[in-house]
Image (cartoon, rainbow, N blue to C red):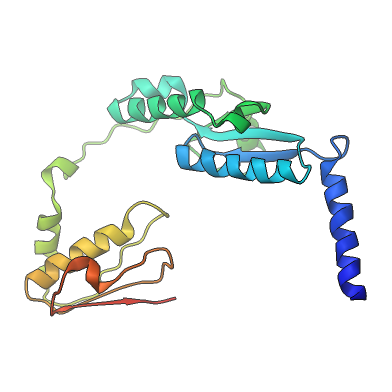
Length: 211
């Protein structure tokens, strides 16, 4: 009980320090994406409820307006971000806000950090490349046909979170099973929720999670 009481005192002192605007400013960092802003808004509300109200919002990785002129994709991203900025959740809209523009390089080193805080810094342009295999000339069925030619092997899909690895893996697995191949589909992502029932009954498709 003595140990528990000590922890309570430490917690109370920590909350007191964090609640003091003269000693602490809480900086919430978010991207201009609806789901991210909603999560940060929830955090803002929870912290405010326990007295941590001296908060500051930094929106990171904002696409500069001049980049929207490059192509249709950049324009769509910029438009989506501006709509998110215009429709900030109520709690966040009341906070002091700073924005940091998306940078084309890693933020490593003093010069890179100086550029991060300079909104007029030049953004390096990559030379245009002649892409032979454009997405419109490719399809999932073409990819599956190429994979099927070897008749066996290990197919690994890797990438950043939320880009569709599990979705693509499932689509490839189902297509290969439909072609008559034995397929073992597995994931190490606890959030993937793979189950055999998602794909209907396929005798040659085995589904398993690895956690």
